[in-house]
Image 1 (cartoon, one colour):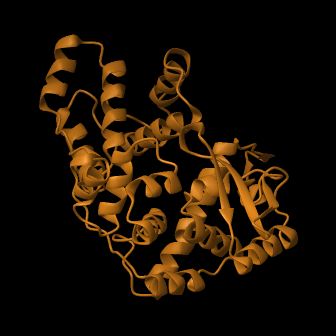
Image 2 (spheres, helix red, strand yellow):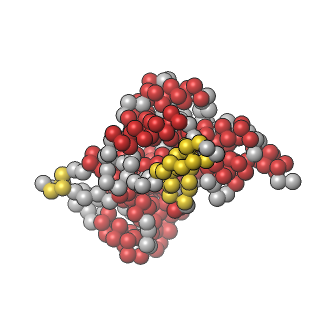
Image 3 (spheres, rainbow, N blue to C red):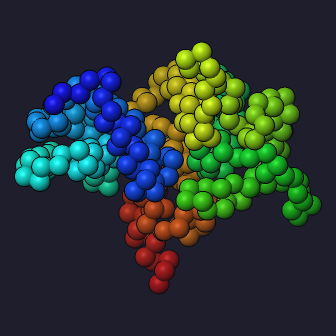
Length: 305
C-alpha cells in the first residue's frame, strides 16, 4: 500500500473534508500541507511504524500537534478495516499537546526590540513590526487590514490614528496610534507603496505565479500565508544579525512584549486583557507568563477580591 506521487488519496481526502466537515479555508490549508508532508515520506498505510516515524519527526521535534490530528483524521478516513484501524490507533505515539509544552521564551528589553526592528530590511516588514510594537496587534491582523480602515481623528485636541481591524475569530478590534512619528511612518508607507487593491500590507503581485503556462489565481488566505512566510524570513535575518535565536523568539513575542509594557504601566491584568482584545483572562495570564512575569494569576486573584 505504498503511496506514489500520482496517488489520489490527497485530493479525495480534501474533497471529503470539503463536503462533509464544512472546514474553513485556513483549516483546509493546514490539512493539505500536513498530509502532503506525510505522503512524501512514501509510507505504507497499514504499518503503524511509518505513522510513528512521521509523528516523531514532525509532531514531536517540531511541536506540531495539529499534524497529529490531521494524521488521525486521515487514518480514520483511509483505513476501512476496523480491526486494523484500531490496532494502528492503539499503537500511535501521542505527542504532547501545546498547553503541556513548557517552552522558554527570551524576554528582550525595548532597546533590543528596536535594534531588531531597525535591522529588518524590507520597508513593508519594518512597518508591520513597528505597528506590532506600538499596538500589540498580531502580525496577521495587520496584514489583513483592508483599505479605508486607517483613519485620523481627534482625541483631547490631539490627532490619533485609528486602525479598524478584524482580529482572531472575527472579533472587531479598534486600536489607536498616538505617537506622531509612527503615524508619519505608516502614512508615508501607504502613500508611497500602493501595493494591493484591497489591503494595505499584503502584496498580491509577489505571489502571482505561473502554473502550466497560465496565471494561477490565489485565494486571499493563500496570499496571506505567502506574505507571512516572507515576513518571517526577513525577521529571522534580523534576529540572527542581533544575536537572537529564532528558536527562542518569534513574531508573536512582539505582542507579548506589548503585554508586558501594559502590565508594568498599570499592574492590572484586566487592562492588559482589554489591550490585547482577549476574550478570556486565562489567555492574558499565559501571555504575561511567557513575557517573563511569573505568578500573574496571584495578582489577578487579589484584584478580583
